[in-house]
Length: 324
Ligand SMILES: [Mn+2]
Image (cartoon, rainbow, N blue to C red; front, side, top):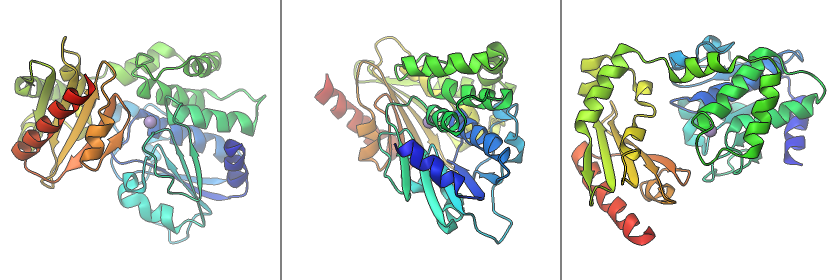
């Protein structure tokens, strides 16, 4: 029903801006590119925006290098679509493009979504926004074979948010969609290599620092990794290369909550939470103004690293007390 409404709105719009969230991931970028590549074929003008740079490991996707940071043009869009954004703030500086559009839409799967657009296509059960985009594209033309670049983008989106089909959010539907994408001729190993086997030496050096900072608390149930601006500067690693390092904390046997704290260049601290055993870390993130999913959430805190760690540790211990 709502997907039909989405299609209707898209079909009635000529100039469309797609906006990915800050610090973009495979789901946001894959979903944007799949929509853009398909809608361009229908003669529409589609531009993709993202405040931050696109990670190099996603550059293999068709159109990834053409994603813009700012709208250079003065004309506004008929439709602005926020992709994979749980709230407006996730668009960062690109929110202006979204707000100036005649109509707005929000395509997302986060449980914490704030329904901020005129039309909100939010499906909490979808493992990735890419699954929702797939359904929109199918509705657009059910019989048409999805072209390879579009299939690659969608597969990337779903693989990224399911950790390569390994997380609990992976559903039978995720596999069904993936199966159809494989039938479109994608090379699964090629995409997997691009997404998961492309470490720069800078990232490995940063990982060394991150692991060196790893500390266990609360009878080894909480593990915290800290990364400072100095660590980034010394190693030369990019911010996005921190992605997934939090799992080294979470994956330790006996650890229930893994936390990664990254010092931002504006003095705030970006915190990622990961959990096991049904512990709901989205509540931890919400306590500090953030959000996310039960097993993966995050927030930004305006404190020094030391104070942020003390506060979060106390809250995490409290959460374990309540939930175990
Ligand atoms: Mn997502």
